[in-house]
Amino acid sequence: METRFLIDPGGLRDLADALTDRYDPTVGEDALHRLGDFLTVRVPGRRDDRGKTVPELVGAQRYRDAVHRLWPQLVACTFDEPASPEGFGDADRPAGPFAPPSRRRVLPRYFSDRAELIAILRGLIDTLFGGAAADAGKPTWCEKTPFNLLYMDFLWELVPGATIVHITRHPVSVLASHLAQPWAPPTVDGALAYLTPIYHRWLTWKNTVDLTDRRYVEVKAEDLAADWPGQRRALFERLGVDDVATPSTFQAHKLANRSDQFDAEIRQVIEAALGDIIPAMGYA
Image 1: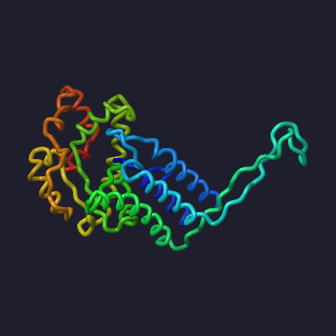
Image 2: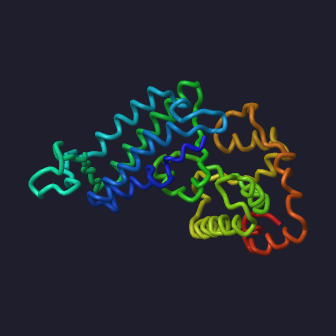
């Protein structure tokens, strides 16, 4: 599923920067607060389209134990900071009959060696995902947060042996799909404003790096759907895993179900707005 906590704001990527290159006590504490909320509230409370949460998928006890073990590795110390009294109390006396309140503060560790911090975060991933895969008798695991694509350098830093699979789809179909999503703008102009900079950022990055020597696989969803058994075998071979008939498949009729969503005039407007993006993504 989309676990999201690897690269989303408040996740491991932000923490890695906050405790290394961007470190100061305030930045680090904020990053720990956000990661704590992510791992203890947002992740356990978010269900995928099967109704499952990440702790349920990897094992609830394993998840709790792994997160509990993480904090001592990231925190230098904690202390209580007195909070200012509220109301009209004098400076040296509380505003009412209760003791002055305080709040718990966390002093994060500074990692001058970024590799040390990355190793700690990698241990969390190995425990959660690797442990779940081992329990299921599987040789590997896959995580599918969409914006992983924009943070591949961090993901290869976190999991050096990872293969990143980029499944593309015609940009016009992608836009049509976004119009049906509650989290995306509901108009063509809004969807273009949402998607166009994402495509530009990806293409700009891709054109500045050499991916030929990296564990990167790019394949069209349309090709997978046209011959799923054959394309699946080829894909799995590139990934170094045995072929197996999967419960879920790519199906041509599902990819084409939005082909007639736009009339000719609107489609022409969309294609003009996407400009060089369509051919740059390998489509006509």
